[in-house]
Length: 256
View 1 (tube, rainbow, N blue to C red):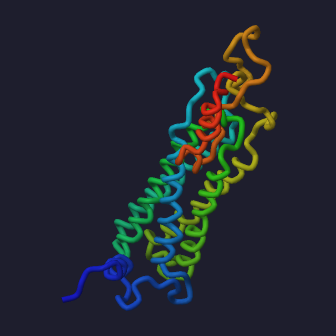
View 2 (cartoon, rainbow, N blue to C red; view 1 turned 90 degrees about the vertical axis):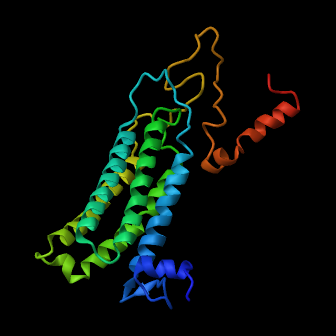
View 3 (cartoon, rainbow, N blue to C red; view 1 turned 180 degrees about the vertical axis):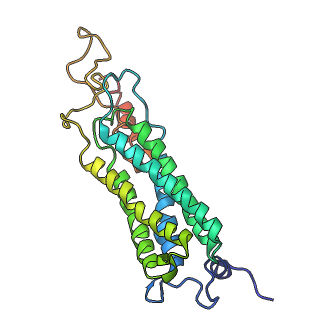
């Protein structure tokens, strides 16, 4: 009696041979299993995890000027991508191909990732990072999701059913996959050009967005940026930003 191991699970999910359950190359193209699981699920799972690290970013309640339009465009792009993947889930359910569960898994992970990323963008534009592009890691996460879309479009374009007028649902899937490139391009342009005239503006605790938190008489000449707010994702995950503060506490220099 055969067991039910990872190979059997992959073979059942990808509808492949148990002797080769996870092919990388298939019929002259990257296999759907490799594309969806490695190029799709893994980058989107990473996007969800690392984007969630910034959901706890401290918000500034005294901001007076609107956030740069680049942040708004990035929010719209993330929302559009979540909606496009949601529409693809509906089409997959209607078509009922043999790899339906693989597609639903990949699309579901993408929806979760972009919704979490949307929340992160909304939080960051209300934080001290609003007048910057935000953590560069966010751009890397978005770029990692592009190969999956490109391979998907190429694969669909080489399948006759996805180009036949007698298969409107499959044509719609090809159109949705192609449409994903538009919000990604908008996101990248919004990141590159944040729509801020004074992009070099530095944010400090005592001079947030040009609005001092203290009166001019009691405000120091230079504000000090909060360590956590300027830290990277790994630093926030493992509280590495606390190290300089702990060293100052050890030497009794916290009040200096």
